[in-house]
Amino acid sequence: MLEFTEYTKFLIALIAIVNPIGIIPIYISLTAQYDSAQKALIARLVVISATLILLIAAFFGEIILQFFGISINSFRVGGGILLLLMAISMLNDTHKNLQQNKTMVEQSGESIAIVPLAMPLLAGPGAISTVIINAYKGNGIEHYLLISLDIFILGLLLWIILKLVPWIARHMSTVGIHISTRISGLILAAIAVEFIANGLKGLFPVLI
Image (cartoon, rainbow, N blue to C red; front, side, top):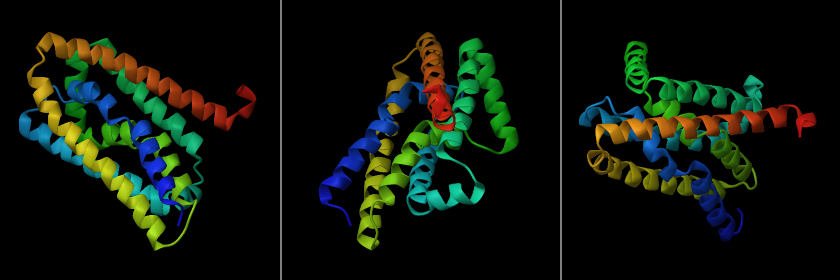
């Protein structure tokens, strides 16, 4: 078990990396075509999925990556490519592409709550690697309970923020949502490039 201040630092770092506030415009844009009940379901799935992903990373993250022979840098590149494709879709033709994305999600039985909102936007390579590194700094049941507590606190904060999103969305016009979508697409593209660049630097140190 580490000193208590180490767990506080871990929580602060995790909140900064996950950046729950930053997902608000992207969440509004990606859920613009859904009704209130679907948005509520998506919000719950986002919180549950992100929390579970980080908990799994804390207990089994390094083992899973080693088992599949995947490095965290490869995960960064893959996640970055996924985000970049979504960003391009948001920038090109807002309504048409988002409707197509929704149709594809429904047909495949998947949910945008899990991909890309929960992962890799929230529980992305940065958050997962941070959890894995801090989890393996110590040992013992107390250590893992405190790591888990920090992750649950993050999940609670994310839930509170997403509960406020419908109020924010109701006060935005259709034009405002479309503008937000394009701005979010640009931000998402920048995040994707950062993911890919950092992953490539890790895979090919000569690029540094």
